[in-house]
Length: 116
Length: 112
Image (cartoon, rainbow over the protein chains, first blue to last red):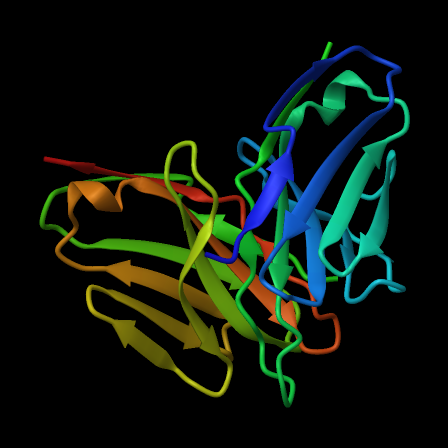
């Protein structure tokens, strides 16, 4: 089945380290997103990309960067991790849609990141 | 930008009872409102959505209502079952923005 996958699933790191979270999809979708989930705060958008040459900041992009290496891959980097970046990170994808239709976002399984 | 508020943050109901979760949004340009369900340790999954040209939509035991004038929308679950226990998120999206803004989530517990 077509799916969205994330690696690693769990990561513990130390303050100041550079971390990369990877997302791959076999759904053939153009659009990819990175969210972080914190208890009581819901899902907040970090970055999103509508195609390989398109990168857009979300609500909370400070301290993060992304790379869209191919249609199927979207990586999130923390250049210098800090403890308040401890969270559950989700990648999501959606189709382009037609005639302005809004399309379902499909989420990956999540990466639990702990910054000590 | 868009702001979405969701209430209540936790909700406990007896099996068989109904559950209602409410959300309000701030951007009158928002025209798409999905609801996602996240079971413990799992990824969020879409359960129902509604566009702004529709006032109500049903799918078996779940329904969503939208009041554009008041800028609020609600999720209704009837005849709740233990497997309905999860975190539910509402979201809103404006056509021009093309990105979802989520509410903070509601933890629903169905007691058997």
